[in-house]
Length: 274
Image: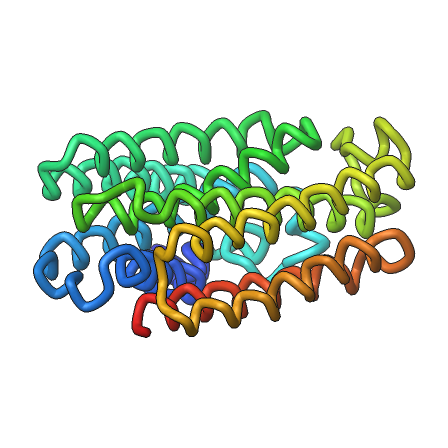
């Protein structure tokens, strides 16, 4: 019998908790302290994201169990503490549960976002992950959808549209950089660098790294956020440096891009405060 520890490891609860915190932050970015008026929906969205990420991780372990025998032998399936079927059932329960819980918001937009996200997650794990660039875009879209959900639960899905697009663009750049870094070790995947070459893939990654920061100007022009939002320029500089660094050191580029995402997120939060 699988213990609770096995399921917690399968779900990688740390990631889920971070996701739940992320969607709450996204709601704050959209409405500031006004999110307190939607406390129930905030709780629902946090639970939905936690279940969604847990389900996605379980499905990932079900699909990649052979790879994990070498790469992650401590995980529940390769360690023999859980069968593949048990992992699949757990993943399905979590993903269906995420959709079911989303209905508690009674908001068609929220429900639609969650349903589409779950469909994309299943499609990614079953097929799109092996398709290279299509998989990169899928992950980026899922990243952006978290910000849309954060806005939707407070009644304004469009409030985070710019940050969602920014997150999607730089995420694509980061995913391409990761594929360049992992080129020698990738098996069973036809990634973008394999299709068009490292140089061309680096150029495309740079385009996305620059396109994301370019969108950060829009809130400045529109006056959407307070003065503290202008600290986003720091993140923009890091992203632009990633675009340059990606040609010689994709490992550093994709890692710095992750740091820049955090800086940008902080800037949006600060902008919502003042």
